[in-house]
Length: 351
Image 1 (cartoon, one colour):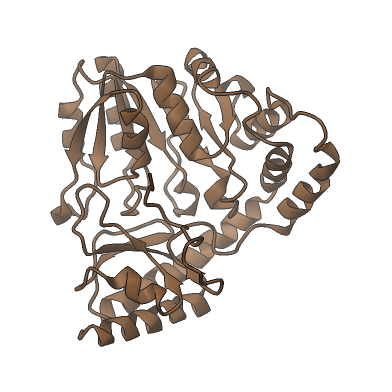
Image 2 (cartoon, rainbow, N blue to C red):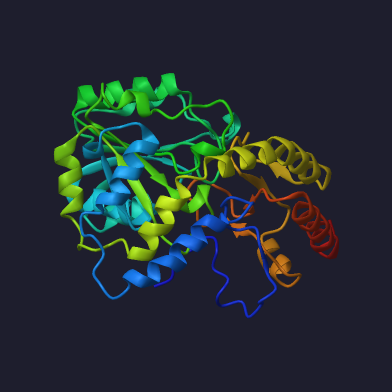
């Protein structure tokens, strides 16, 4: 069974493909990370630390939280599944559109899912009305902030209200912040952790440091019992010696994220304007490192692949029209190539 995600370059037989379907740091992986992973070859003959002590300590220092509030995993997706297996919600709520793996993970636990439809009229932004849908029948609520694929960001005060509504209803609140570091001026909801033991936050090094092939993510929560259940919900040694070494090295590269944010501040408005000039409708006001738009054709992905560029079709996202697409924001020369190629593809289609 195939799952539709960005980054699926392997079956295209195009080694020269420029991949706009994945939304990782456009500056690439820091050289320090690659060096650390190469150095880890010396540990390849022994088992990695099943308790990830060095990585947990580094993550705790990075986040300014107790080590007991941190649980690493083999990427964000793996931790989503661990959460589902550990908690097995009877009923959960998920906004739509959003990242598909929440529903995929919950399908493995036979969870009943209530989808909260985000309105295209408001640019798919989350609103306070969701609090009225959080009842004692709901065991878990998933939020992606910034949301994927829209790039919209919920105000921290709104998430505070949502967390309180979940607490009163006896529900867990899972907040995916894998893209939050690309957003200027919008803080993490990490300060809410101490007040809400029902809150769990997902972060990933995949996006920040362009380490998609390494697979390292982590969750933060003051609920130590929940973290222990998640830890036991999967096999040991889930993080290799290479991944651990690379992750620890990445945590010392904060300037890499700052440079990416500075790049976003320039390239995001430029790319928004360029897409609009082509007649493409921006679906949401993205504050993240990717943009969602609607095109006048439903085969734009295929036309772009033929021209050497891969974009993300969002036709499989619940709540989005079939002609929806997502593109990452990259460096200017790559963004210019994207726009020129889109112009060619749309012209050939008669637009």
